[in-house]
Length: 341
Image 1 (cartoon, helix red, strand yellow):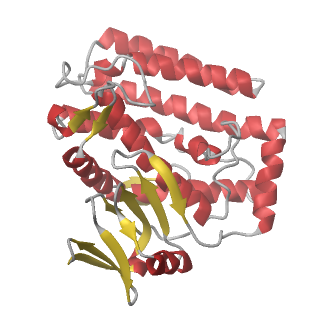
Image 2: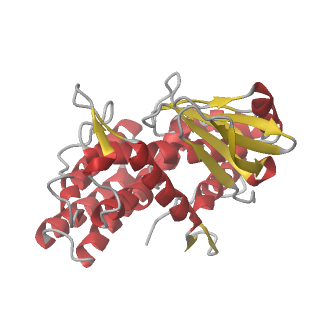
């Protein structure tokens, strides 16, 4: 199993990254601020006007370090990587499964059931912690239990996507009940993405972007193609398999972190920027707060339900990518998604 290494996030505008020996060097205004051995890194994430020397990019490619580029406000643009790892037989098995309606449905069903079960656990935990209207949370938990069963009985991908959509709608309809503080400032109405139109959506979108980077990197590192999925349809530029794998992680990793940041007042209204168009984004201070919390969350250790071992949360995407690869190779009878307790 691949050991989880660190991801370096660089968001200071005008920063310049270059290679010095075996190290990644970060310069700001011609002053060296950080020097990190490349073998200690798994990825670099650059926000906005952050420059990388071609020699550094080549060095990262040679050492399996992926470099992702995002806008200053966290919108994913693309990624630079070296030769794709993994063998051709695994990729061929992945493509065959994606073209087989029955295998595709089987994998997608497992992922959606895990997603809905995990969203239900978030609701139940919120109720247990004394959040919101208990009756409303109880009703949401019952609805989500119904959707978990319905997902397991879906006979085609369109039906499964419909169940997943209804489950997500029911979950987000009760999201405000999980907010115990700053309810007026962080009032949530409906999930909006491009662009986010309120602070909660801006926070969720930023966290989902970070999760996408980790998922995509984990899939590539294990020899899988992040663009060919089973639940999300193929589309140019879309990393469908990364989106598939994200589903079982969204609520209990990203959403719970967003709720914690708001309820503990670690993130506040001043950490956001509102555009004239009505779009809302995290500002530099807000992104720094979220990134710090994200890195700390990745270091927390949890017991993996399938391996029955305690590992860092940041390693979970790699474990799931490895389990999926083993299933596609025929080493596992089924893909075991993460179901959070």
